[in-house]
Length: 336
Length: 256
Image (tube, rainbow over all chains, first blue to last red; front, side):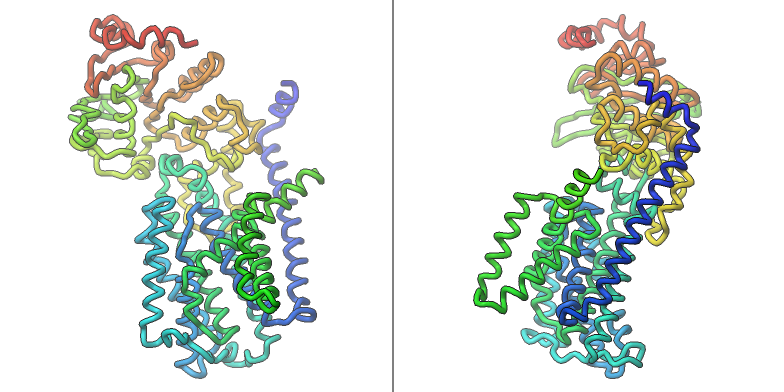
């Protein structure tokens, strides 16, 4: 009781200031950590094959975009492959059709198309909740899948192959893997920064409130559907950006990207890494992509899916908040 | 005549698949009153409450706020007009801090809730005001605590502080003392009394001692219709009310 009184004796303005200082220090620590991570990413191609790194970054961005929706808006989309593929196909189509189109404009076109698709999906699905929302997004994504099978510009079963990477700003040849790596890294950093800012924005606060208690947010006068829709559109735009970048890297857009397996995979990455944590999707994507490529080249072949399944089950059973959530708890317990 | 009623319903009716939960209720809430809606279980109190706050759509009838028809408005819209509700189960944002809970409500008036490109630092301008609201309900020392970690009574206090952050014209409280021990009940009664200064309050309440202590006017519902209306003494003397309550009276008096 006495401690409470002494706390209350401190003027409120001072208390607010102390709190602000504490948060500022936490922000500085976070920024330092991200800088270190960025330094690591800048040096990574010295040790690791750049194309593999680029694949990792694309899927990490995809998972981060998905995590924005699931972790911060509480919306489980089972159709995110549609946005990933849409970005890929439109970018592939633009770069193949208009030779001389600079790389960044190709990526931009794919991203814009996904944003628009996200807006349409969102308008149709956002009023539903929980499993119904997931079902509607899945159904819509299946429709998009069949559009990509049938449409004249997608190459049907073959997909779009040999997509030219183009020149960045019409100047720098993207055939150079190392140059492209740094472009992909820049794209990832941009996408990650957008998500980071969104979460720590006035909008992000309201989004979290909606996730925590939707009826209460309504009763405070917030138009909940419109806020959720914005999260959905931002998420689909970034998923499209990831898909578009992936197409440039592999010079390929295929039906694999649009298949519902891909929607499942991004859920797997996010849950594995830790939903609702900023780094979780990055870690999850790294684990899944690394396992896939290292195991499928070995003697195991198709067994890679079984092994991934087992790992997923173990993760869900052992650390429900994902790898990053588990690590965070470990750090909190031992260092605080 | 109209201006003295801040909230009014005319022939408010709600049917669920042929079952009439609320039957032609005419309710008039006077400016500045603390008005209670009471009645035995299943009388339709919560349904009326949800109709008034637009969480349910009426089958028939009108809802007027300061003489203006608000029947067709959305729940979030009437909140922006100044009709703000609380919930039966304490409704806080569990994984936001206590301070952030109140700040989210304050933020609504800034109209920046779609700005995803701005830093949340712009919200710190609201911190001091939020702390003041927390101080009013003795929660300032919990400012950094996650709301989910608060004990039940404190959660209700936080919910009230969050509601008051919107500076509502009409406060709609859904069983504010439900599930509380007597100490917490006294705290909530004091809080509501303080919050009701210069405001109108409509509350659904089971605890008749709370009603008798707080309320200027009482509407008794039974089987979806208005059974009686008046101040506590006239309502409690009404034989029909006594009859409607007979089954549950013992339980009410047994409450701490």
